[in-house]
Image (cartoon, rainbow, N blue to C red; front, side):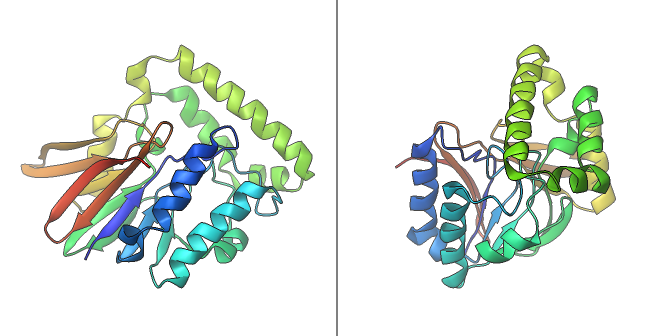
Length: 241
């Protein structure tokens, strides 16, 4: 009995070994015997729309759909790289969409689930861009563009993101402690699971006089990372072929 969490895979044609690792892991016994699999955002390096006819979205849909067909629910939360992923692709890939900031009960423990980017409030420039691109008007405008134009826009956005990341201070790209505390208070929980920062760790701290826990999922750039939650506890570990 276990529930699995992954995030920040950033699947891309430039790293085929990670796509293969993802497919291999989803086909394995741990996933197929799980109570559920959660993907907390940034499944791909860039998502240009549910109508993308490239090979990678098709491979992902086959892998996640096979998990769903095996009787294991696959929950998906959009991140900052794949926030344009919608219900059309989710249905094709066997994904159940989950809102960022949802609270799910994990074996009797209410747990806040987030991608994590909204918690990085010290990165003011990023938060301004996030508000812009998450607006319904911006998304509608982009999705109305031809597919090739969207691919070009995504490539430009990735380049700008790399430039921002390389020039920004490390501290502002991590979560803000006050933002974490407020999000957990608002949700009424003492447990949080998120990704985005690529800094896998289990943090214990005091929140309003009680012990709280924040688990950060790892990225899949060089290897995989999974959090296994069971009634017995939580295990965060790396995945290698």
